[in-house]
Every structure is written in C-alpha cells, then in structure tokens.
Image 1 (cartoon, rainbow, N blue to C red):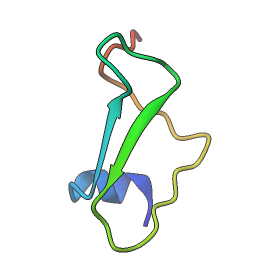
Image 2 (cartoon, rainbow, N blue to C red):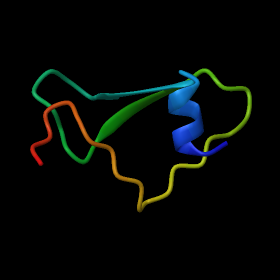
Image 3 (tube, helix red, strand yellow):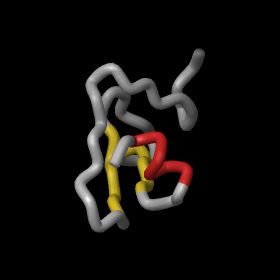
Image 4 (cartoon, rainbow, N blue to C red):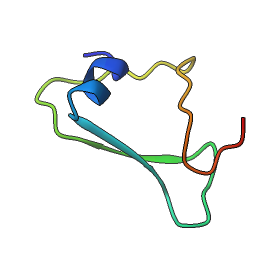
Amino acid sequence: MKLKETLIQNLLKITELNDSGAVPQLKVMKNAELPVLILDVEELMGAKQIE
C-alpha cells in the first residue's frame, strides 16, 4: 500500500517522537495487514513543522 492510501483509510498514524518534536524523526504506527511503502521523497506536513 502507498502512504497516501493508508492515511486516507486511517490505517497508519504518524506522530512526533515526543512533545518537543524531532524533525526529521517520526513515530509510525501501522494498523494495515499489508506492508506500507514510504518513499524518501514523501513530504509530511503538519505538527510542529513551519512552512
């Protein structure tokens, strides 16, 4: 499965490692049966990141 598909279906939860934030380190919890492909070029926006 691709990252976008799993996020839309709520099969994947991505959070920061702690309250202070640690970009580029993230915690990923998967509820999908199939493996999830996260490419190095994927861009995740939100949380404590500033555009």
